[in-house]
Amino acid sequence: MKEMKVKLVNEEGLHGRAAANFVKVAGKFESEVKLVSDGISVNGKSIIGIMSLGAFCGEELTIKTDGPDENVALRTLVDLINQKL
Figure (cartoon, rainbow, N blue to C red):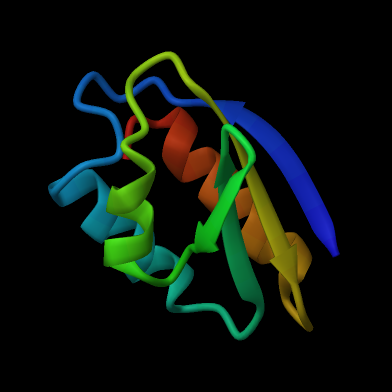
């Protein structure tokens, strides 16, 4: 399992289009993806789960990946967040 913390820089947070984009990219990987905010962990491949976090701009998130392509998945998702989704 790999994990990395990242600060959410998207002005709208992880809502609507940004959440859908995260799920779309996460779904391309075989590895399990978890997104953690304030101690709450959700499936990173579930738009409902991500939107339930209510993550806003400036919040710190932890992305966790576990599986055969966990390294690539983690780096790709961290880059996605850093590029404002």
